[in-house]
Image (tube, rainbow over all chains, first blue to last red; front, side, top):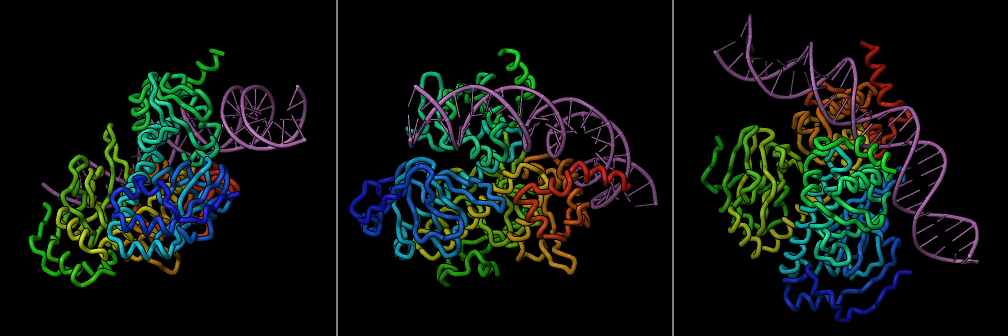
Length: 257
Length: 257
DNA sequence: TGGGGGAATTGATAGCTATCAATGACCCGG
DNA sequence: CCGGGTCATTGATAGCTATCAATTCCCCCA
């Protein structure tokens, strides 16, 4: 189960981008109150209902933030990677559940203590403010992607966002001579929920993009982006229809086999 | 054109929810650097490219934050009402354009001065942090709404969000004996862009909801929410199909006329 | 009071997408 | 090495939705 290291001993983490600009004393205080936690892929870190009594900072791996609807479906609202904060700093419920999309390691700060430190440390407050601002920008980018009418466009947007947003993380995005290789950290079902569609459609649209030569599906969860330009065009506009309708592409594919 | 009041004289504003918990001295400092600006419906407050050199706080009216795509389409990422902040506090571009959805009044703080004050005033920083946190929550709610597969569900979600989010503003949301009356501050075309669809579909889905008795379209931009429960169900899940498919509803409507 | 023009609505049709069903690929544990 | 299960893919079909076109509504202004 979840491994909980009960010591605040100096963890390498606090050099992570979250806290790059804070004062040494603040860093020490954080360090002292911090606990390292580890979860394995699939484990639940935070349940929907229970507002967590800690603030988390991801050290490695990927977390999925999501909301459970009445019918049990999960709607993903964000992916968390190293350097991201989660949990709610202030009063009020944190209304999402957090699940480990891969094996994960994060540091956890007791909520009360963190908030106390926050009040006393403008530098920390600034760091948190920056973090949330970035998160907000990301959420807005996602909104734009989601408001794309066609699925291929949403997927293209998602791939590009993965790329630009997680580009600095080797295990996820890796440039090669043929293009950029992206590791998709979530299943087709989750991806479908994220993009407001169903897994079958994800599969079809992905293969349609592949047949157009824009991407290459090396494994279901490892995709090579060949033509960023074309993807960007597909993401910004559903201009695929200019070239050929999705249906055309699909029927060509059928003939070829 | 835009009316720019060049005085920082005490404006009633600073009692607005944004700055409810700040110290008097901070309030005075804000007051001193603040300029009131007024724009009429349809005017552009911030262009896409130019990063604004001020931070704005809405006093009255509604602003639309949006991003212009390559093909010229506008993707709305948020609506701003009284008490909301906009612009970017830190370095880096503010990548959205802001347009007056109604006649609007807001106060503008020179960016450098605001940021300076921010560094010196933990209370202000806290207030801004809270504001952005709320904004983030809102963006995430919107993501969930947008990931709804069916249009009627997205609209239902939007109406409810308007309701819960802008409930405190009389001009937008008003409870009556028959239900809650919501004023839609944007055109069908904008609403369509916001929800990732087209105006015709908005119209149809809206009328379908009306024919089911969940809402009543008093005017194109004034809608009465009759059955919140039913709307919530429609928003969380596309359960409309359990009752009757959208097509059934539409054909019934055709018969009735 | 009578256009003019944009917005909203309605109709008809084609086309994506959801859905249901079935097959295939892969991983894990026995 | 062989099940069992989950996940991805593929097929077929029905059903929403986008699109194009036309009409109506409404607001503004002469």
